[in-house]
Image (cartoon, rainbow over all chains, first blue to last red; front, side):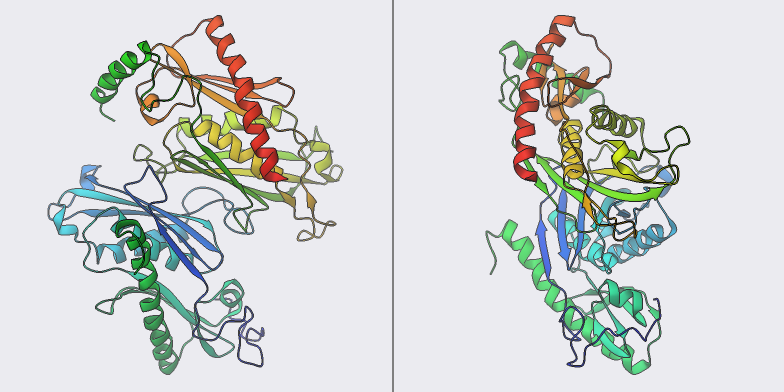
Length: 242
Length: 260
């Protein structure tokens, strides 16, 4: 959070700079089976964000020390392409992408039925091609769809979405300017059927009441995004959308 | 990949070659379906996506202002990198760039650089002090064979659509990156004892040496690379060199059509 609460991000009519209401998402599209080399894949556009995810496996886990006798391990990489942001990113791992990869893996391990594949590994490759705030949510949401496309058994879907605070107002799905000049960001990963939380981060400043409202927005949005995930899968496997 | 699979595949490819056939039914010099889209990434100053059958590649251009090399005070620079990230295929492992990845980047770089398609003098802002550095990054998302040609095509198309962001850096007005030529790569693989154009994944797995040829607008050659174990005769090379010209002309027309 930049924490510059004095930059005007909400107009007098209550609308945000891009015309959205407080609890409105940016436009989202989800497509599955987009990467022919992968076992499962997903392309998600979320506002200006673009994420493409490939899933490989389950396969033998190596090096052997990462094997778990009772379950599969998820080998998740979140990576931003060098041209995905306004300043070029040097290729290779950095602290931020490492942390996001780690929390993403842990979130996905909570929904994948990992105990069905002892000693094996499932590779999840998240590539951010265009970044405009909210890429970790976009990556996690797309990764869950790609896992389903790969036929990996899962307990539930996973939707990740963020709410935050700008100009002392709780809003859903912060865009770039709102993220830079906002006061709080609360990304969560929600299992849409059980409403359990598999991923949670937050930074900034929220009162308990603001936190509750942010979570309420997130929960509502998760249900909306879940429909898009299901429709994307249905359009590949069920001959079309309901 | 286990050694035995390419062995069996090699036998199969040899039998097909004897009948002048290919594993996917194509003719010796027939290209798979290629689709090119430009300006697909909003945060890149120029971008392209190539869908070359099952091979998918993105290219993006970014700019920086840097001090010129002391021996070339009035010239900007071009840097071209290709990444073979593990997203692209089961066979790619995470870690520092592999030799294959570096070769890919350097072969694509030479083809573009040596064609002289970018006049480096035009990238000078203040002689001896400030020049533009052009950074072309190529990202392979799905490898189903012949990533070299797909990368080179995406790379030149992204450069051709790039806008120099001078306003953002406070050094004048935004303007298109001057790209005067369209170098195009054509790649061949020795499969079952003869060269084929545009090898698919199985042909790469069960094939021998490869040759990459980059040709400029006037048919002049700008980069060559022979890769992997294997040898070929000068007459074999003459045949694919002649064919490369036809292939390059067709793809060049495609780029011209998409960027204009």
